[in-house]
Length: 346
Image 1 (cartoon, rainbow, N blue to C red):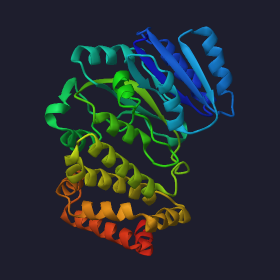
Image 2 (image 1 turned 180 degrees about the vertical axis):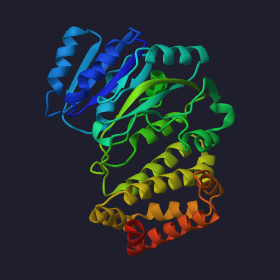
Image 3 (image 1 turned 120 degrees about the horizontal axis):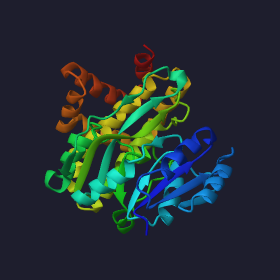
Image 4 (image 1 turned 90 degrees about the horizontal axis):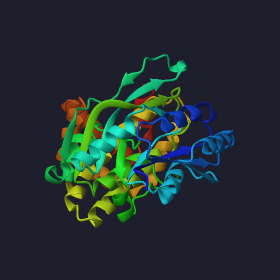
């Protein structure tokens, strides 16, 4: 049994794939398996995978019809044999010591998640210098003592450990025992967030390192991959986590934490819409909310939730800004889209 199974979902990224594979086969930790999931690529990704599988026996390949990122990662999880699980996106690359250090941290601290720092590397058309993304320290967080709600509110939502899965190492035993999977991309948005929230329900300790191991390649800014059902999908994500948390006896989550998660997702969504120049796209996003009872339900919960107000304050919203955010929620609930559109256009 390998120490780590590294799952790489692949779709039409032939220009970057070899860079990613090279960074994995050259890890200082050699006892790994690399699971390349070719998710119906129409370019030469399949051929590249086959080429490297002949070179390195640690590489396993899954060729499957296109089903989206979640489907690809789940296919990798189905055959992963490692003690730990890592996820790397095919257009990113990692430093040589990444998995050696994360495994050592997880083993030494008996932690259920090991987190590392990452570097955002921008494509040439972005014309931006690369930058380290997180302010991490060497540390160990006792989630069991802190409480899941407080960890989510104090660490997860403020993005101290990031929402992504590719700067973390997970225990395969926990994933298999609780059948944790990525929800379908067609049904929710931000599948990484929901996977992490599910996993956190079973997490006792988290170890962190400030070392920068992942190079996250950011393509030119585009909203083309963001669905016009954005807010409804994010609302659905929140509802699924609430159901999961309550099922696992985290009833406090529903009362204290869920409204703040919803608040953060609405903020992120409005930010996306604000930077969109496609008015028709924005109109579709807003119109879709008219049939979402869950959006109205969570909006009301957020409106009166103290932790949500604290979160907005931590994001720099003064009293007037926090009141204005609540006004926006009311407008969205009532379907007053022309008001929202005018504010976004301005």
